Image (cartoon, rainbow, N blue to C red; front, side, top):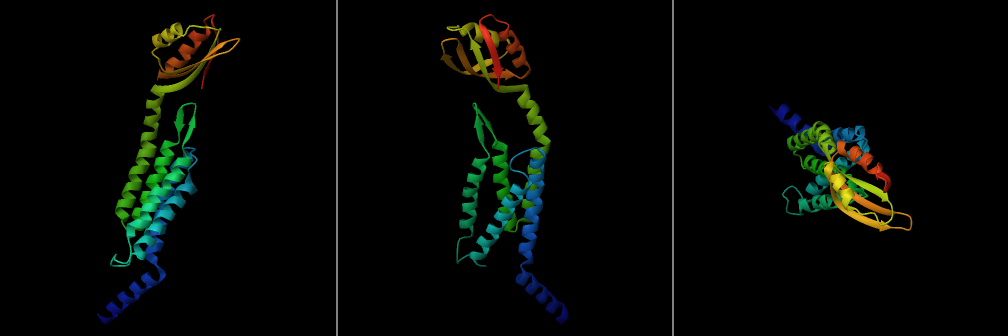
Length: 230
C-alpha cells in the first residue's frame, strides 16, 4: 500500500513538474487543428493546414496559461479574461480571409473555420477533451460532407455580375424582359453612358444553367455589342 501510494505521488509530481497535461493539450490541439486544416488545404483555401494548427495550438496554450494565472482556487485572477481576448483577436485573422470582389464576398467559411478552431483550442486548453474532440468531428462533417451539397445548391441558384455593352441610349426595359423570360432577376443595375456605347453593370440572380442562355440571346440582339459574365 505504501509503495502504491508513493508511486502515485511520484507520478503526480512528474506530471506537475514536466507539465505532461499541457503536452497532451498541445498534442490534441495540433491533431484537431491539423485535421480541420487538412480539409481546408485539400479544398484549396488560404487558411490551410499550418494556419489552423497554429491557431488551435495558440488558443490551447493561452487558455491553459489563463487558468493557471487564476490559481487553483480561481481567486487570484480571472481565467476568462485572457481567453476572451482570443475570441476578440481572432476576428482580425478571420477578417483577413474575407475578400470582396464585384459585389461577391469570398472567404466567409474560412473565417468561420478559423473562429471555431480557436474555440476548439480554448476548449482543449481548459481540459474539456470530449467537448473539443466532439466539436472537431462535427466541424469536419460540416466542411467535408456538406461542402459538396452546398456547392450544388449554390450552382443551382446563384448571383452573377453581368456587364452589357450596348448602343448609345439603349433602352434597358427590353433587356430586362429578356432576362426575366430566361428566369433571371436583376437585383442591381448601374448605367454608364459613353460617347460610343451605353454600359449596364448588373447583378443578376437565378438558375445557373440559364445564364449562358441569356447571354447568347442578348448577344444576338442588334443593339448589343457584347455581354460579359464575371
